[in-house]
Image 1 (spheres, rainbow over the protein chains, first blue to last red):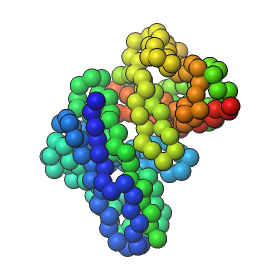
Image 2: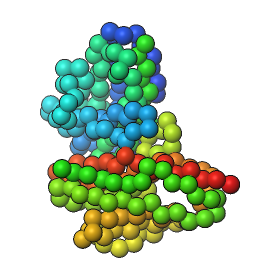
Image 3: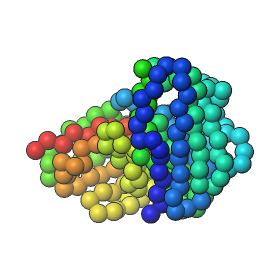
Image 4: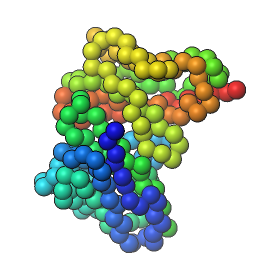
Length: 116
Length: 109
């Protein structure tokens, strides 16, 4: 099956620093990648949708200057949380689809971010 | 607006059967997904329904009625490892997934 990896799995950083999270599709080319955030005991919240080579589409309420998304290739997307604050602490999950098979989204394992 | 409703929490006994319901109102419909999510982990795909009827896959089955905006996930022969959250998601006319809040399933011995 299709595999999506994320790196790092968890990260702790100081308030005010920036953190980059990588999302890779390992055995398929992802036409679209999605970034989600999930707070404890809540459902997934879509942050943005990115297509290779174009600017990401952000959901309402998500600051594009704070959450920088780069989709440099068909197998790699990055999310950079700039000037992180404690309220940005969350579980960040990426997913990717190949555009075939009813657009099933394949999820990465997630990144747990803790901002001190 | 778009809305997905599913129960917040359910409890069932090991070896039994449980049905988790999901109702939806979305702008367009391109299929309904069920995902399983264990605490601290990413969701894993369980099933996809786009036509009315029942899809069976081992101990798990998923049903869809498009006219009623309704789906259910049926889990048979429950095992302790089935304790998890079950997420219902609908793909709308823009091929975007609209997520329910998830149903936490607690399995008791």
